[in-house]
Image (cartoon, rainbow, N blue to C red):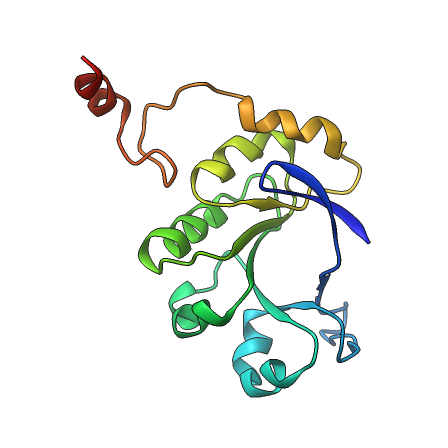
Length: 170
């Protein structure tokens, strides 16, 4: 089991992420294992994934359309967004869309090339779980929540921009 950050705590995680190998083949998964499958696999056999004894969640690639998952969101315990590269910010938009447009209330996990530098911003757009990149210290990653004390722009967690908050506090 690996450790992740969830809701500001380091916890053990039992979910297995299903990724294709170099030949594009997906590994077999035991029926009772909790698994996070790519959107394409979910859409190809939704009924099969739902019938498993283990829980099934879905992960989105940066180019995936979250609207394809909208009808299933209420039944999913977890949705993950893949950040294949530190410099690829499309996942921020996916996270915010899932929370604000599609009202997803379950666990929203960032996975892939996730570093402590991203944690504060990911938290602000709605992510509540983080799989820190291998080789990065998860203990020190908790400090990422407190990188900044104030934000100028509106976010999922702070819907009013700073200038609106200052006017209401005077």
